[in-house]
Image (cartoon, rainbow, N blue to C red):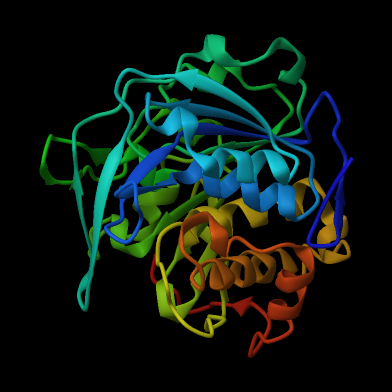
Length: 321
């Protein structure tokens, strides 16, 4: 058993949550290496582990990322890290501007094969598919346990990476992974502002929940149905003390949301009252305050930040379909 930030984490052979994706190397001039390790798999696995949920991570890495000390940060938090060596991993340059983030890439990533999934993990109840460069192919949808709860970071399936060019975003569309998902997270900046929300939920299975993060305005959660999005709820923004690094907030939000649905004790069983969304918003707020993965906080700090929320999530009756 490991302890971090006062939270005991069980070291079970079968994790409660498995996170899958390639670790990105994000260009960082202030780091002696010139980059920091990131990617949804890194942020997601560290988040769920620090919230006290036994976590395993299948992490795609290139030659340089394979020896990153950030991987030891995950291990120290209790994450069972399984590395998958890639000849080409994702590398990003993120430029924050008043109009939003501009992202350049150094080329596409190799895909993660389903053969990387350990046999003993195939019964894990919670899964986070966290691609950053469409490196998790659709055959992963069939590799996941039939009854498992699956969260997907949609934005990582929408990117097309071309060497030394600005990242191009495909419009959201059908995919086996999205159809398999129970929880889907995406930023409002990752799809066209004119795209109706019904177009997003139409490619999801009925009953799945879509969470659209809206930065400083919080976010909007909705349930996919055959008639369009229903049961819309917004959650309030929880402002950070300062913004040091804007990378990873969406991944941390989704990971915390999945943790709440996998282990409802994290929110006292109050999923129906929107405390799952508040947990995600609080965790996403905290990660902005540190450099890279150092911003990911534990359960105590996240609970304290939840208490600062200006209001609870509430119905959004006038949300546009």
